[in-house]
Image (cartoon, rainbow, N blue to C red):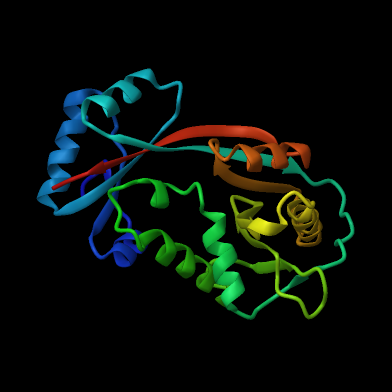
Length: 238
């Protein structure tokens, strides 16, 4: 593909049709329409376009080409100068269980893959199932943490940790629906802080949806500050 279009192999493999990211050098309408036409010629079915919210020209062009706003993605960052203790009940796991699948799927309740009606109904669950499989196997995550209220009890919380851009990244974080509001998410974040420092890093990052207000409030209570926001658009091509 030419400059301005990047094929996304992971998404393409999962969905069974070509998915690409739109990266126009210019946000002028004519330039974006040329890239969309090229994507059609390449038999791309879905384009992602990530736009900073202050880029008014790009936002206007997105509306003009019929792009669907599916997410307002916010990046939170926390400095980790010291290592706290790991809370009781939090441990590492390398065992894939039905409960881990359930928690992973719950983590994406505000996901664009769930909310965009262009996707088949099973896409969201298949994506998050693949995500936890790759995390437990080590292909996507360095470590998978779970919270268990008792040693032999099922996990009621999940956090997967990876490393990107010299930061530790919380990739998935979920608390089982009946157990929310009990501080389990904060315990998992505290354990993530401990791992961050123990691994020799000094920053912890998490990305979530701005519309997931409960998650945003929790991250801010735990000491994260908002670093970056961008809008995600989907362009479906016939």
